[in-house]
Amino acid sequence: QQQVKQSPQSLIVQKGGISIINCAYENTAFDYFPWYQQFPGKGPALLIAIRPDVSEKKEGRFTISFNKSAKQFSLHIMDSQPGDSATYFCAASRQGGYQKVTFGIGTKLQVIP
Amino acid sequence: NAGVTQTPKFQVLKTGQSMTLQCAQDMNHNSMYWYRQDPGMGLRLIYYSASEGTTDKGEVPNGYNVSRLNKREFSLRLESAAPSQTSVYFCASSELRGANSPLHFGNGTRLTVT
Image (cartoon, rainbow over the protein chains, first blue to last red):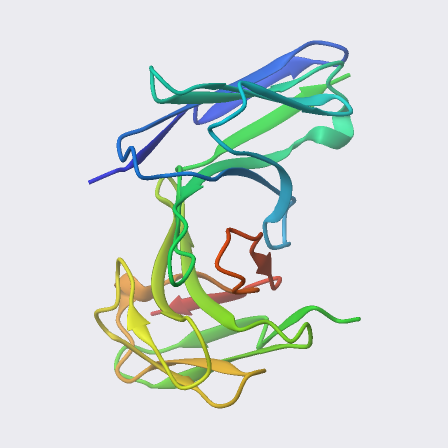
């Protein structure tokens, strides 16, 4: 059972364009939605995260949009750069006695000059 | 500050062999995790340790065992490796504050089982 569905699996964007990655979740108990960025040969690293009490969060060129009623959230990368080429994972978790994170399958982004 | 350190970086095993993947963190985090990453399947949790002295199964625990040796170290053992365990394994850690906090990952161990 895939609790966090991510699309597309791969994405090619021209330099300067907007990259958009979408995720949908099923468990309404999730209350923390991070995005992780992974470069080849490295582990994932937290990029940006949002909680369901806000509809949008922006950090530089990266923006998360969150739609609680639709149980969907997305990552927008504005003015995409070749250095943004990486695999992006959306994730979801819920507060409790421990933190257990459920990841999407990942999106491999390639930004071409 | 090294963060999360995993050893070895690469390993090739034959079916039936055993090995232990090592992980250590220097951030004084309470919680530690083992994930495997496979193409088209994302990151799947194998085992986690919410705090020193406790371990619990994740999504795909079969064929693996873990040991939380102390607060810093969390090892993953394959007793009898199988080709289906060919994967990239990531260790991660996080603080446990009663609120969500980010996972800090190591750079992975690429394991091939022939």
